[in-house]
Length: 313
Image (tube, rainbow, N blue to C red; front, side):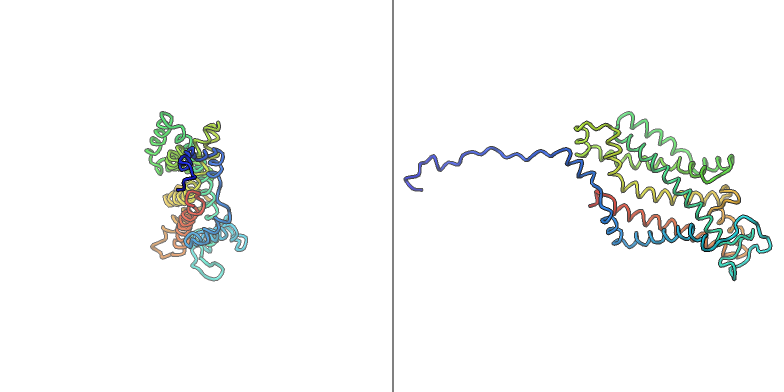
């Protein structure tokens, strides 16, 4: 300190506190709504060996069921008793069944019906269950409690018992089975989406959307459902697998689709009746297709959840 410097100059002038800039609500919404790019999703899937294996298996099954009949056309409408129950050999790679139908072509036709019913039932269950669960979770309170009690009551009804009654009373068709299966499967989806929305509705981007005047409809469709996409993707793959299992169970119990329409469950049921005769070609090929389809859907669903869920970044 020199004598020429006044004492007052030694004192540091008080500075006003620096406040952090308030976040812009639109930026919070934009960040939250920003999806992962398609290239990032593919890159994540490429590094997931199990998911990649499941995707390849599922694609091969779709090609087998939908493109296979064009490459290997067979007669699946006219019964040929003279060639019934032939073992695999020349002209019949997987032999014939008790009606003389080519088993390989029969599996392709049954796979088309089973996959179509599974996909339609999964779409119905996912769409309705997602909207129902998101609305219940966002509104909360008495409305949420009432909506969830409806779900609890419907879940108390045995699913297979109800489906068997309908199948016995009415003629089963692919569309009717998909509607019945999807009409019950949405209950689980609704509960899962509701639990996700209960944790999301208190997040900053939802509060910011409310401050900007967004209504419940916009919040559900624009902010909440996109942020549950990981759960939705996993569930839609599991719903397809569950629908195929239900179809197989109904066909095995004799309540599946009627001739000339067929599915994997009906074929498996017909093959089991010949198990004592060692007609393995009527059981193992179609059973293997069911197992591979369900396994591939589960593997792909887990991989898609990790790749698409934006909160995992």
